[in-house]
Amino acid sequence: MLSEDELGRLCVVLVRARDPNNIGAVARAMYDFGFHDLRLVNEYPVPLERARSAIDASSVLEIAREFTTVAEAVTDCTLVVGTTAVGLRRKEHPLHTLAEAAPLLRAELSRVELASTGPKARVALIFGSEKTGLSNEELSHCHWLLTIPMHQTEGMRHASMNLGQAAAVCLYELVRNPETESLQEPVQPATAEDLERLTQLTIEVMETSGYAQRHPANFDETLVRRLVLHMGLDRPHALAWTGILRQLLWKLRNPQDAAQH
Amino acid sequence: MLSEDELGRLCVVLVRARDPNNIGAVARAMYDFGFHDLRLVNEYPVPLERARSAIDASSVLEIAREFTTVAEAVTDCTLVVGTTAVGLRRKEHPLHTLAEAAPLLRAELSRVELASTGPKARVALIFGSEKTGLSNEELSHCHWLLTIPMHQTEGMRHASMNLGQAAAVCLYELVRNPETESLQEPVQPATAEDLERLTQLTIEVMETSGYAQRHPANFDETLVRRLVLHMGLDRPHALAWTGILRQLLWKLRNPQDAAQH
Image (cartoon, rainbow over all chains, first blue to last red; front, side, top):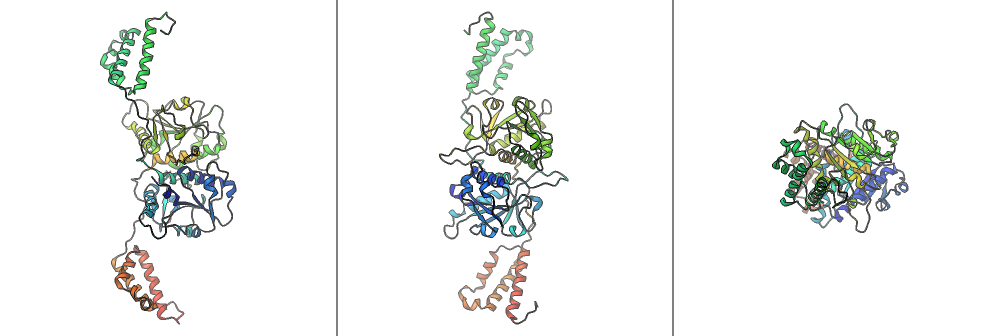
């Protein structure tokens, strides 16, 4: 789990992103996962205004900063990581899968706790344009690269992921925490008494409806008990079925009676 | 790692998705991660044609099927899982985080290998509309729910994630495989001889440039050796620096000579 301080030390750098929808989508993913330092690198002004209309991400876009080179955008960063599609990889750069990369990024984000003097640890995660990725010059500012493993279809050229989706997947992996406490509501388990009452009611229904007479081979108390146990009912559901079977039994025994007893 | 067969047994069900861009984004994420069974539930025809223009996802959209109810869309499924924002959760449904849910989904997808008779295991992952999520009726078709944990800002209402990004994150988690073999190119390590040559050249440069005379306290062979070792150079980089220092040394000793030696 990243602390607020650690979340604040990751910056997302978009290089040559032109589509305001994509910029807005990245900002939204950052907002969703608790990040807020967005930096845009473009040689000409970005249509930030249009991107700023993106729902629920306005706080990220309001403080987004613009730069003209990657070097300027990452001056204060202590770890600079580029993202790439495997097909576009440059062999001269170390490459990690996203799942391998995330612990390395988290370690750098938390490093400031250990070294309190000198520059604060700050991590840049750089995304290139969807069409061309990052140039060699841009990649040369990166300590290493990461890639999101994608499905390889033989003989098919595969484009890189949509920018907003790639950012969402990367940021999800960074905050991913499988040790988080369970969201499960505590279940009220059924007791043996609850289930035995249901077993006996089921037997009564089988007898009263004539099922036991028509299918004597299937009518066996131990078999019925197993059927009931295998339903895996919790207490509220066991009690609900008990009520349903009681009403059913009453109707079987009082077919002419219109009242609900 | 899911097999092709297992990838084919997951279907993504979009309920009341209206925006063709969102449908196209979900299809693209499915394509990226190797899934292809997309099902749309709408009371009225979906603008599938426009969605079908989505880049690189056409093979998914071409075979997408339309249904009018959730019940019809999931008839052949043995496990039906709904997605929800935590804020929209219904307490009556078991809820897992995505990281908890993924092994359960993978287990069901691979279950067919064990039980070769009866219906094939097939898993439905259902996404509701961005605005309203899934209705109570739609949720009642689900065995359980999953949620993508998001950042909670105090006092802020948080919308659910963008549909395309939520689908990308869920599908990424399903195929996520931290045990995958490393993408690292084998590094050619520098030998002690390479590094000692570099150490001695550095010492020569310090002496020839006058640094050793101006800063005698910093001029110490063991200190220089440590500086070189701490650079963590691999062999190609050590050899590159060796060449640079040799040229530098030659120029220091032959300041008038214009030739490259």
